Image (cartoon, rainbow, N blue to C red; front, side, top):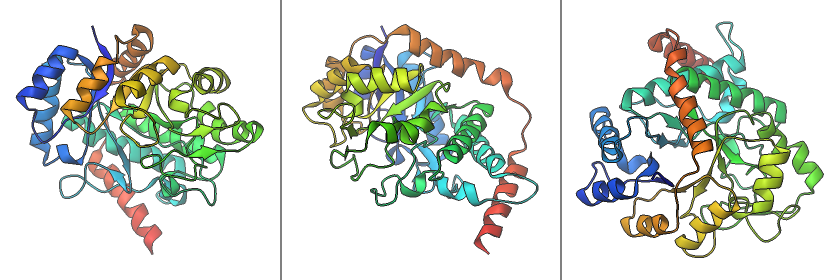
Length: 338
């Protein structure tokens, strides 16, 4: 049985307790954070150990590597990447803004694949609204739906061209939230017609991509009582039907303060609402044990679809010069700074 969960890890190496737990519960995947990152050899050893514990060479290992302020792999071992908002302003060498977003994704994929990381929690497809909380802010590509879709798709395609699966986030939209869902529950009172024309429309333009992460945001026009992650109405009527997303849907982190109740209740409510997989990030063994107790076997259809998409990526890898690609991106960033 594969557990419908993605878990974090406590430190730089896998402890005996963690290895035994993961071997026993068999989570679908894992996620890495800055606390798990020291140098390339250490990260490679950790990703290898994680897959060894579950006995699956294709086990998804995730990371948040958007660029800008959300980047777990950082200098000196890995290059800094632009924040999402920067890509819409890059020009040069005959490349379009979309070309640069693809290039950013392709270069990030090269970094991740070298470490055994095969899923990136990017791109951000949220459409920011003036006056909203800056938890999204410059992580977003633009304020116009068409531009967000174009650049987000380009980055997703760049990631996939390098053998890394993208996760679009935060479906059905976090851009107009007035609070940081890490700390409190954002409530959006915008009319449904406006949401469909902006926030939801960006994700509809990306609905064919294989994975998405939910927003811990209440949309009162759809469900005034529950955030998207735990709302059957939002997941079924908006994400699955109106947006048309049919891929693997994962929750955002269950330990974020936007969600109410204990972890057992949060995990159960997320899965009951229609999430395929729940995400728990902080690496606490006590908390992971509670999440596992409320999480059943993964439904094979969406998971198999995501794994099939992952398996298909290497077959399409084209030759790519990482050094030249990095130089092109650096030259464009230098020109922008002038």
